[in-house]
Length: 551
Image 1 (cartoon, rainbow, N blue to C red):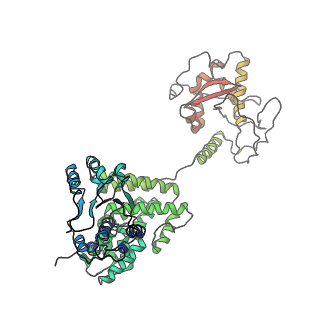
Image 2: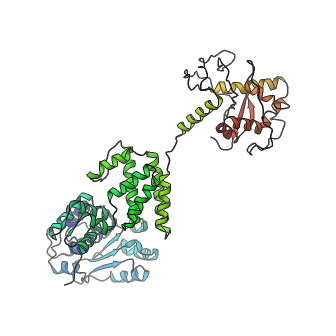
Image 3: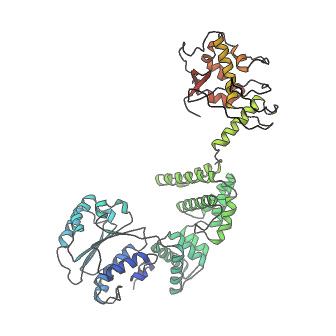
């Protein structure tokens, strides 16, 4: 007698045998018990969760001659014929190979005839999403109003590919992936029944590799037994299934988090030389990165994930080496690698190049941190880090300006970039520390106001309304002469001193490139920012700048 694989030998024969699908089994049993069985069903779910088995059990329950409550007896003639796929009234159609409109037309002709021996004529259409659109359209009327002796059961792994017109004519049941614990219990029973000696860790490896599909788990169990007989170690199970050792996987992740490219590449080479499947390794890395990300987001809670007890401590140690931002970047790089491996025949090269990127991932800098770095750099360039502490702001009836008691010791240029016609209201700022004084908005704009008033007093205007605006976004020319600035007097601002470098004071805004070049030589960050700006208007004694790319 030929050998029957475990997946076929242990196929469910009763509703109670549907592991992990108790809700669906209960609904179908109640429908049969109350004689409220629909004429069309759609069973959807991932592979190996019991869709076709449930369709056969329902078919036998509807046609069983001696039902056990609502379960099929599996001993009567009808049950035996259906189980052996020999019944003349039960048609199991593979839609992947019988997907044409001619097959559906033949089906429509057959439904007119009464069943030969059974109570119902049942059509089980497996992989229903593979039917063509013409075939679905030809089936619509028959599926909506079939003869009273006909039942349709459609099974599919991709319900989104089934037309809505078909879905609306069927009762849909979504089969869930089998939970890990339930699968472990069943595999343990199978091991005892078949006299197999497998450790709990080996069974867990098989169950995790199956990803919720019982057929995949039984197939993997058959594979292990064919290689090692009735006894197999954990290492043999990993080798047969191509599953990377957890310690090697954690070692690879640790090297990546520590930015140790050499050890990371060495760990990858060991995994590759041991014959581990790169696709499996990629999936495990994605799973590990996801687990670590959720671990950090949920403050160290691992109850949400099905993580082995011996791996929880390793996850905690890895979480201390990385940040949420780095994990998000690594996840996106791994997802890009998955797409590259689908299109390329050089999977190993793609994997190694991605490891180079993963080992160089840097933490993301937030907007607040970036602004703080710019302020610190500006203060260092201006030489104001060690300057005396500014006095609290003083507000008068004539002017809303903050006046520092001591002028800066080096030139400082700031322009006000606003989107409104008038400057914002004065808000009294708290006192600042001696170490990092921060200028207010009014203090920065007071320099510009002083220069504007000086230009107006001379009657020259600002030049914005008289001359054509040049290309301020262009790089400054190398031929421009450097600007030499003298030390300001106590009553002068630095902007007034700089304005002396031009022939006419009103040309100051139009010599914007030279101004930006000077600022860039003293504070490169601020100068780079001003290169994307240009003065566009003068309102309320404030120059308004327009940025091509808003900061």
